[in-house]
Structure formats: C-alpha cells, structure tokens
Image (cartoon, rainbow, N blue to C red; front, side):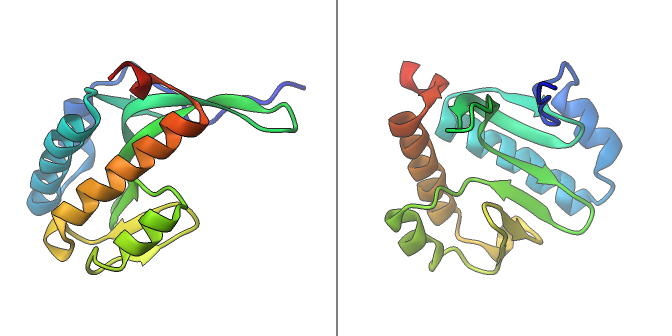
Length: 146
C-alpha cells in the first residue's frame, strides 16, 4: 500500500483560515505579522498545508526506505494553546541561534511559543534562513530559484 502524506498543500485561503480559526485578537495580529515576516524571509507567498499549517515554499524529501513527499520549507500554525513554528534545522548554527530566541518550548523539530513578543524576531529570522539554507543544500527545494 502506498503511503499518502497527511499534510499537503491545499486550496484553502490563508486569510479565511486565520479569520475563522484564530479567535484571539493578539494571536490573529501575530499570525499576520508572521505571514509578513516569513513571506519576506522566504520569498514565497503563504499557502495552507493540511487544515492548519501555513507554509512558505516547499521541498521534496526522499528517505532511504523509498518513502518520499513534499513538505514546507518554513511555516507555522496558530494552534489554540500556542504557535507551532516550523523553522528549525538540526544544524550546529541553529543550535547556537536557538539559545537567543527567548521564551519557547522545543519539540523534535518544532518550536512552540505563546506570542511573538516572547521571542527575538532577529533570531527567528536567522533560524528561518538557516533552515532554508539547509534544505537548499540537502533536498530538491523551491528555494534554489531564489
């Protein structure tokens, strides 16, 4: 049986998602600020991936097992409890940068924050740049056209 990715680009409009899903005004403002910042940093317009992830650019991955697919280069999700930031590449530079990010929790490859004012935006920009550089060097990536 072929594997089907659960998270893939959809036709849902980002603005419609934010306006219908995000119910806190501060989280809504932070979401629109993240859209502006990540669009600028990545060079890509926001697209919805799955029901709740806003992604900027994409890359193609292929594992040794033969499993392959597409994923966002960088992005975020304004979840109910906190933001999930998909901006981390497990590189030495990212590990050094993350120390100056501010108030956050770390998952395996995801950074969780309550609000943008809890973190250093300059460090977030550098983390995004490092993630894009890593993907460009290691995967088939839309970022190569930049």
